[in-house]
Amino acid sequence: MKFPLLDRLTPVLAVLVSTAALAEPVPAASYSAAGLPPAVASAAAGIDAERIRSHVRFLSHDLLEGRGTGSRGGDIAAEYLATQFALAGLKPAGDDGSFLQKVRFAGSQTLDSTSLSFVPGGGEALPLKLMDDYVVSNQSLTETARIDAPLVFVGYGIEAPEYQWDDYKGVDVRGKVVLVVVNEPPSTDPKFFKGEALTYYGRWTYKFEQAARKGAIGAVIVHRDDLASYPWSVVKSSWSNESVALADDPRQKLQAAAWLQLEVARLLLSLSGRDLDEAIRQAGTRDFKAFELPVRMNATINSRVRRFESSNVIAMLPGADKGAGRQALLYSAHYDHLGMVPDQAGDNIYNGAIDNATGCAVLLELARAYASMKASTGTLPPHPVLFAAVTAEEKGLLGSKYLGEHPPLPVSQIGLNLNFDSFAPFGVPESVKLLGSERLNFFPAVEKTAKAFRLAIEADSRPLAGSYYRSDHFSMARVGVPAFSVSLGDKFAGQTREWGQERAREYTARHYHQPSDEYRPDMDFTSSAEIARFGLALGWQALGASTPIAWLPGDEFEATRLKSERTP
Image (cartoon, rainbow, N blue to C red; front, side):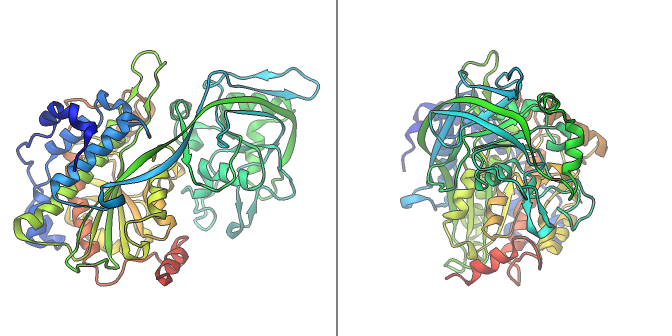
């Protein structure tokens, strides 16, 4: 198989993918306590932090220009991943006997000539500055959208009958623009929007989807750092480049999908004689009623529209059952990042070293480790093992959404998805976060394996961030596949938990979705290697489970799973 995009990079690859001395494995007692057979323990012990370093260094190199979806750099990353899967001896599981699963996209880049203002009745227009005051994208994929429509404040913009909640009751928003608050109604009751943990109703993607379903032509989300769990700079960088959608998505789309900076929203409400903080407080109660503001939104949204392809990269190691068993295992990680901004002053490449070259490197080491079992001892996993590096995660989990809708095996035959996304290079981990694992009957095995690897399982330290709904495992959960992400906790060897929490806050504030998320030679990839070993052990436990892995009774994804199992 030829990979033409890599031809000119062969000298670079020869240096970056050199074989280094193996890192010290975790104690043999850990593998024994986890119940791993000798061949599996040997493969886990062979996972190497320096190989992970080589992959991260290449995938986050400036030559790949930030791995933007549908860009040359993104395509090079896909070819690189396919090459590594091939070198490991895995079988292609993409389209037409290849490793690549082509995904058709439509992209819309908002142009600087875009304008937006709020016009109060009888008053002067309040003009806004693109990127500083607001960001916007035209989801309808036309080159120009002109909007002159009234604004309706609909609180959190949620319709959730299971919680007896409807922000749209008693109001018709067809042909109008809705103003919504980021996140969801505050609660400490686990039976009401899952308490402090964010559900999908609080995700920005849901708010835009629901506004479109209600017939609105636009939706404007009010950003607040504490509720969103990230600063305006993250919104700005994430929306400064092209917005992307699946080309064949039949859902109704908004002409204006926008975010509004908090202080601008405060001024907007004051123009209407209202206080923003009080409006948000009321929106968190069942007594809230949507209301139309005496303000119109006037906007001309100019966009550059294109249609293109990008690829998921999928490989498979057949199982000993020689068929598509009902307990196939899927490992996943996204390889895309934010690309580059040509006109941006200074460093304009969003390299995405931690997010998510690290997850891809872990995926590649896992693939090599599994394949090494067969090569060295003839050991095959009990069931097929799939490895998927997906595209367009940063565009709204689109690559994994397509994968879930077009899986290489029927979803009923995929027993578990373990996803890997962003690993800080801080040394030896002593804790992990496995958000969503507690929703599965597999959780006792998760606890046993974590204990064997001397890893404490931490609860979500930022429940308002809605982490479960922000990474690619969610796309598989939506089609019923038991799924969760494997993440680092806050505790590292030789450091306090508070030290780890401070490093995480610093990364979010200074480097997350910024050009500074780039490879440095002093990075310590021991953490990624340990996570890979732990992920291998978790996967082997899932492959050998005596009963199929399932969602616990009453889970929001249980019904979808049961339906998929009834489908031939």
